[in-house]
Length: 418
Image (cartoon, rainbow, N blue to C red; front, side, top):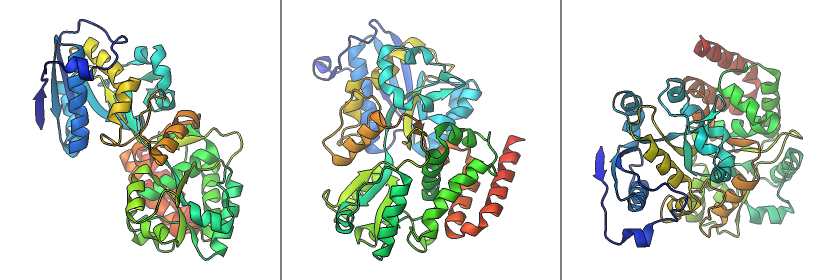
């Protein structure tokens, strides 16, 4: 655990203060912030936000406590209950559900009703439980299909916008002696990403989240339809062989070497592709194509958040800090390539001059009307996610086992519901 008192530096307000017209004047007292941003770059971002906000409110004493991320996960319930700070980091969607349901997070729907919060619309669903909002987002990153543009050009392929076009491309890729997709499912979560997209494109975001909440049976015909669509790619030999023996990093060379043409993955993979020798002329990105006509496009974009604990003592200052966090200027600054290197949620922010960050920002800001999911192992409960990802990997290797897999997963869902 590391604690840092706010340091007031002469002249700081003139050089680092963000436009302050939207923020309240005259804040005073103490503002206690607990953060899990313990790695060097995120910690510097967190400390920088405290200093800039403090420069805007010189009568406010800010205490920042930075806790190791893994330790934070085990401590959060205790400190929210016993000695709550005024602001705390966490995650969106179902990961915040236990603390919302226990009455430990403050309802901040009043903030979301303010005009400036319209620029955060892409993540509003992920911050909503029971029709109310319980925190604010500060960063996220896109998932999508990274692909070999040069191989597409060689084979005369165009970027698909529908699943039929994706299947047609895959047939040509397989005929050329390549796999359509690389994947390393040894540690299971990558199969969760494939299910997220197949299910959201087949049945939509609302259905996907209802399944995540345990409100839909795994044996439901709509879930079976998701697996039927997924199996079309498996049966045509779309994935590399023996992917269950590779980690996600160990699966990268198949695409780098041209043995596979695409990877459904998060944007954190881009530096690895570049380090492997792929230029930006060779590497492209596209949104996972539509499957069911009329189903709004939704995306996986894991989102990190700030919340006000219900037991906070300085809620006025906490609300002002949340307004500061989501402002376009702040989100531009903290997500820059020399900071978090991710995407601002605020649609009025700007992103670094990077091909893939710009593509992800445009997609999440303008082309994800269906909603933003957090990823399988964040949206589903821990027990369901663990059993679920085991079943998803098994399906990719042994698709004929689907009935047994779904029955097992349904039994887990029923056990959790009891």
